[in-house]
Amino acid sequence: MIPDDVVEEVRARADIVEVIGEHVTLKKAGKDFKGSCPFHDERTPSFFVVPAKGFYNCFGCGQSGDVFSFLMNKMGLDFVEAVKEVGRRSGVGVREVGGGEGEDPYRAHHEANAFARDFFRTVLAGEDGSEARRYLEERGVGAETVEKFGLGYAPDEWRALRESAAQHGISDALLLEVGLLTTSERSQEPYDRFRNRIIFPIESTSGKVVAFGGRVLGVGGVGVPKYLNSPETPVYQKGEILYGLSRARHPIRRDDATALLVEGYTDVVSLAAAGVENAVATLGTALTSGQARLLGRYARRALLLFDSDAAGLRATFRSGDILLREGVHPSVVTLPPGEDPDSLVRKDGAAGLRRHLGEAVDLLDRKLQILDERDHFSSIEKTRRAVDRLLPTLRAARDSTLRDLYVAKVSERTGVRRETLEEEMARDAPPVARSLPRETERVSPGRIRGRSGPVLPPMGPERKLVQLLLRTGEWVERAAERVGPEDFEDPVYRTIFCALVEDPDLRSAPEGMDAAAARRLEELLEDPEELLHAGRVFEGSVAQIRGRSLDRRYEKLKRRIEGARDEEERRALVVEKARLRRERNEIGLDWSSTARWSPTREHRDHP
Image (cartoon, rainbow, N blue to C red; front, side, top):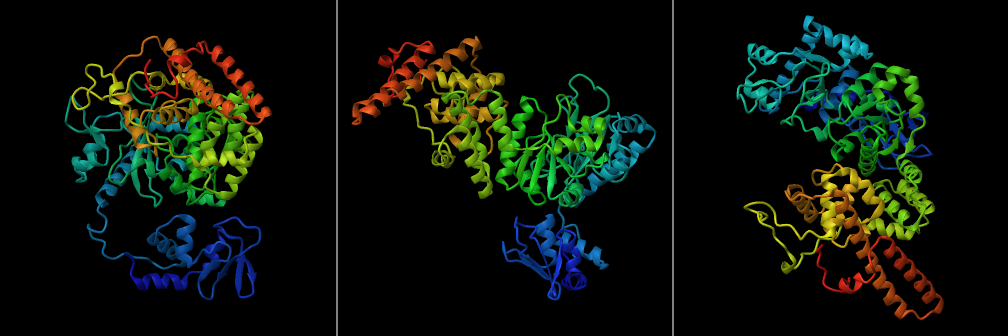
């Protein structure tokens, strides 16, 4: 807590024009200053700074406040950080009162992490760190960058950190709580989590060390992960922090509020060593809403530099949609095959990287490019699947102007009317799954929840296909080319199928998934039943799902034909009916199956 008299002294001595002028180009307008608002896009400047009264106001978006609130809104600082920053600029020493142990319940955790950072840095600078220093130098990471990021080295010993910490009075219990020590099934005696690794301290936006990442030096042994992060602790939730943001937030602001989003901390450090300082990275997980929201405090635009393989593209598009929901405009940077930001900047330097950054493509445009390259607009059925893949991005766009542009572009490219797309976008939440009649359930031995596992619906084609896709992710793209969400009758399997199309490596319910679908997904992942002959299961399930979907459409067409009053309309419907019949025959199922199964009958999902 900062005393009120100190806050007022800082406020009185602050040069609000100078502080805001670092972020906004201000021009004199009488006694005041005018410029373009940094909080919204505008063509005519409507942002005014009034130095005599110490406040700013935007007549366009309504943002207003004093020098502290400006830094809080622009830089994402909390009040105490803002007062300290302005005090530093104004030459006022800012002290906090009430600084006992009770004020920060995690003070000991931060001190333990700070001790570990200094320990790792000391080891890197000493004799034991010579190989690690050589490795960093070979990758273009010099002493200045090492110092800037606080890089260190964990020696190839089991208890070096633990013993050093004990000499400074830091307990094993605290080191275990912050993830610096760990135990194993073979021995409960704690030992160092990080060994023979280059250490990357992970900081909060305020600069406090909250965790560590480690890259193994050399090849590593069998079963040794290349990268290792601290576990989540009371001061570290990996889904709420971006690596490098504490240093990148000012460069992001200087670079027209543009951030580079990369996959790992080695990319961030290598880019910074080459002079590209506005990069941040996720921490071993897919981008989360919390991370996107945090980035949105500093950036209006994000350039995504993920791998260009299938997994990298999936991560790119998932991350892009999450950023759109948080108001950050994403663009995709395509690097040469086999290159990542680290390797590219070491080979071609910052100038080579910036050439690729200059060719970044809007997220939706990149999706359209890829769909076009894969021939997804060559038929009505493929175009329908393409629309399904584009809808998540349309729904995610929070900015109304950008969303309007996206809808117009997709409508033009696919031929689907704007009104139809907007109706589809409105159908964001999947419907609640209906219960299956109890008499249709076939419970196998050992599958009763509470004793030996979950009770699952019968093994019909929809479940067979989803189960196969969960176990063998490489089938997902082939399935998406053959069936779409509209072909699934069970809304729960439809929801899981859509989630798999977005993430073929799905192993847990994604954020926002319907509760019924999340439960079914968990049950399917736990289900021990084997699926033999995957190829036959795939082909058979797809054929039955497509056949049933065509049956439903065929029945609807028959009813429409019977009720048609206009002869021209009736003729068009008859032509469509004939086309459906041909398509039904092409997938190898006799149309007479309609006599055995009809969408008008009670649904029983059996083989």
